[in-house]
Image (cartoon, helix red, strand yellow):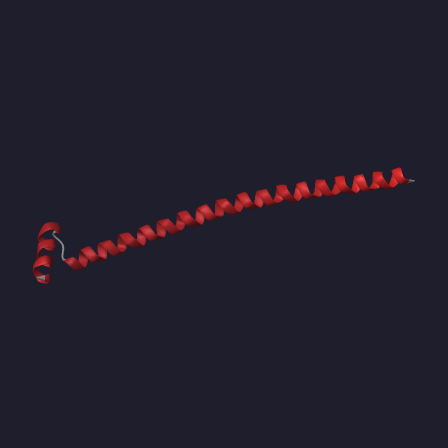
Length: 80
């Protein structure tokens, strides 16, 4: 039965099952590599966005701290 199936595949595709299996393995490896590359690029892009957002948040925090310090100084001046 298995031999008949292998012969049928060989007749249809003109290649033995081992070559078809190797072809499938090669294509799967290539696809896996491509998916990994895409995932790597997506992570890289996301990290760049996060880095930019962190920079913006740090800038906002610095401004808020400066405003708070100014208000505290004004409050001290007003109390004298």
